[in-house]
Amino acid sequence: MKRHRGPGGSLNGSVHAKRMAAVILEVPSGLRTPTDASQATGISLPRYYVLETRGLHGLISALEARPKGKQKSPASTVAALGCEKEKLQRELLRAQALVRVAQRSVGLKERRPEKVKPGERRRRRPNGRALQAVKALRRDTPETAEQSGQEG
Image (tube, rainbow, N blue to C red):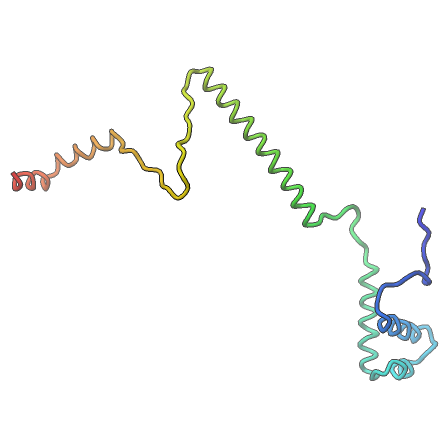
């Protein structure tokens, strides 16, 4: 069990900041007046009040309730996404294997993607039905009939 370390515990901060904090805390406790505190630290009275206000704001924000439980950091989020990605890749490979087995059982041929070298585009094969439709359309247009009559 941890024991509470009271005001005598180690406090983080520079020597100058600790000195300023001590002087600022002496004013509300009645050990010093604001004028004495400003003279002791070598700052003007308006600057002392600015620092006192800033210190009180810091105290209040430090005492705000913190969210309970473990907080997610960006690194833990990235790690979780990496695990999810691996899981989804395994599921994809399993589903692809099941599709191949189902295709074989039905008698469908397995379609393998064509391998294309890097930097090279895959060439499209002409579609037989489309070529027949183009020929039929060209036969039926009057422009092609006139051109074929002039050529021959």
